[in-house]
Length: 190
Length: 433
Image (cartoon, rainbow over all chains, first blue to last red; front, side, top):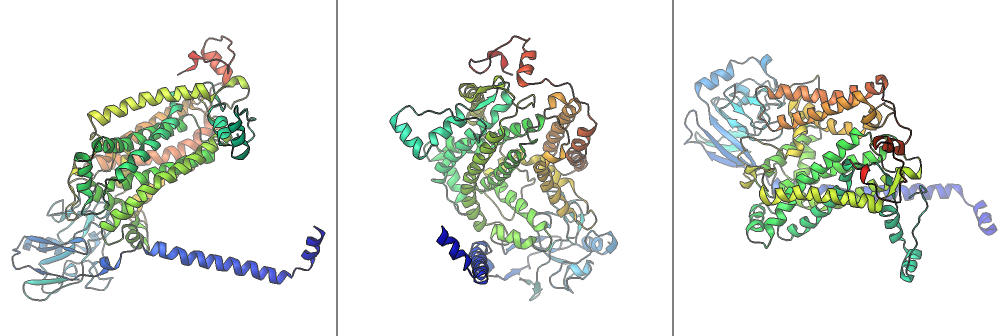
């Protein structure tokens, strides 16, 4: 014991502190670097990320009809809206909207949610939209609800003919993916 | 345990003494489940802890064998479950035991929790015991949710979509967290795989927390319907045979109802849509969670409007999680010094109103979100919050409690007409109920 105490008196405090801190830091960094692979493996893997572009032939879609394609595991609706639906969409004032932002990936992120901004130029009768409710991810039913657009059966969100949220718990308008009409009858999504 | 009483275990054989000197597990068991003193006035509401242990064991046992026949792959899962039902020997029975077992597990846990709320079991010095129970309940909900996804039916798929969608409500990092949970942009095979892995893991974590829960229980000792702490030896009886037999009898009655459901109405608590294979492009006309989540689901759907900077989606999710968080802080919300509702006339009334409110929320949760239901859900949710945040704190300050007996023994004797009775040594047929 006395030998131990004697040893204590000659301890270099700085060296000991340095060792404590260095060991602690190495432990924290080590734990963090080991934790990361465990978290990272849960993220979408390469096969999921392989961003498929989908080309859709819409020549068969008549006015008032829709087509649903699967893109990144989610349904994308391609709808050729009727004149009445377009008129209804245009007649809505921005101030009436719950979400006044277009949510259109083809436009700047702050573009207002006018009917025209929910489509691409010259194709304003066409809605191309990820048909997933922005509340909790259900698939809304088309041409239903109070606004003649989409109605989500899960929690009662109502969208208008331009896919904009009007009523219910969903916070945002349904998302518009990047898309382009590559010809008169073909839409490329993604 | 823990200095409450001295161990009275004396190993009888040489082998017993040899083990006792090295790893005194038999002593721990004897002290915890044989000699352990329990209040002499426990009623049948106090038997659900034992029933819950039984159900946990049953779920693990049936789950382990079901996993031997199940394929956690989105292309195979649905058919493998049908294979269990049709091809595997006794598979139908094991699966119905497991699926109905989950429901009965929740029935038991709700009785157990409401008993705790009624008799004030969460009050000092049992706050940690209560919080450990809340953690078990959370783990149970996570386990049940992930288990419901495994058959890969329509309700599995869309339930998973909706519930993982909760996390996308979190500002900034929500979408990242959601993708981390489901391993993609939509629920799919990666989701099913990880849910299976976690569904197998979590019950063992529950078992671990159950051990802590029982440990905490045995440090503070059990509460009882009077809420008066044990003061003398005449207030208690030994765990065996008194509690063991009473728990055992309650288990038999409980299993009787359980068996009725398994053999006669195994799908009564399920949903027909889950016998349709998952289809990522079609949402069922109505998504309903399992019955044990319905009150929380109703609270989620009650918030259909923005509250200042909080949008309706985040608001609903916060209201739902908040309703569970409230349970954790109940020991500090209830300001009353009196433990049991038996001596709190106003609390007793509000307790039953609270039960009615929760049942109403559950009923609304199963209804479509139209007409009068969203309004009712909102009123029910407001009452739920008011019960914990206003009624519990205020009642404790203004309520005049009824006169309380001095001890458990006095309460028991008063109830039974005053016949003096030496407690502890012999069984007491007239103290039940």
